Length: 370
View 1 (cartoon, helix red, strand yellow):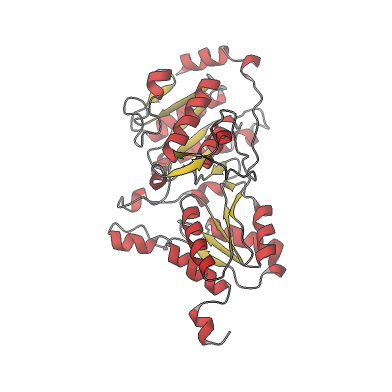
View 2: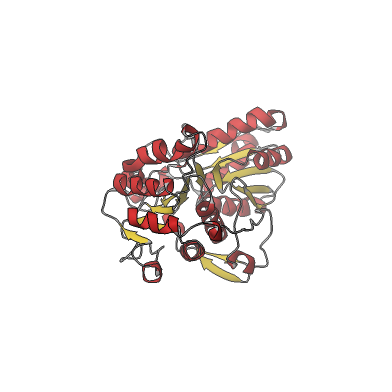
């Protein structure tokens, strides 16, 4: 690895610096004519960034010969060779430490965790070595590294493989935390993460890898990049604001369709970035709709939704016409049984019921004559 560092840093310099355009998150891509899976979006983003910058390399368990546990790195070993696509032993603490050290020396590692549950083995390097070094060195040490992999609940994988770490990592200064939903998100945000000078935690979702989303020619352009810290309004509305990230954005959009049939216009915000949180977009929406529902898969206590609710109470309390509603996972370790697992994660009907309560359209309020 030291040989790679010397070789890549020595070959670096001004010739590697390039201007990259950031496409605004508010632009509309409704004219998209092609579809792409999230898996292919991540793969293409990695491929393009590795092609553009020889300092970018990928490391993790089974990322090379096996082409990734979820085939995100398909074809990359053959194209870039074992010096830039590194299969590691099953030792998260070891290869994460190597990655952080490589970033110290000017490389741009992308460290893949087979699941973010396994990042707990490496959390000392993520928090103490990566997140804090820039501050502790008074800006002398930059740590351009990406930690990526599937996060949160999948299906039938048990409690120790189903944890959502969004709020964990989002609580740590020095980290940026990204949570893509669509193929557009996956491409634009992963490119932004790799190009960023600071450590980025990139939380994917296993169940979204095979999902296809429409993408425009602009999204497919190699210069495409999304701004970190900017949410996207996926659906405009006037009666209630629904915030969500990752897989829950799809659930929120389905709930909004159901609510529309009942005369409730829901605005759905895809957060995209958990840290830094786009508080201005959230508060602007709440000041328009006067109601807020937050949706997340993680535990309710100290969750992302709790932080959003606090922001709205602090900045837009006078605009609220109803109590805020938080939809989150059950406050228990994830059950293994399929029927219990479904009860432990938010469902579309949970969001619909919360929106009706917020709009005083639930059966309870009808019975009371409100």
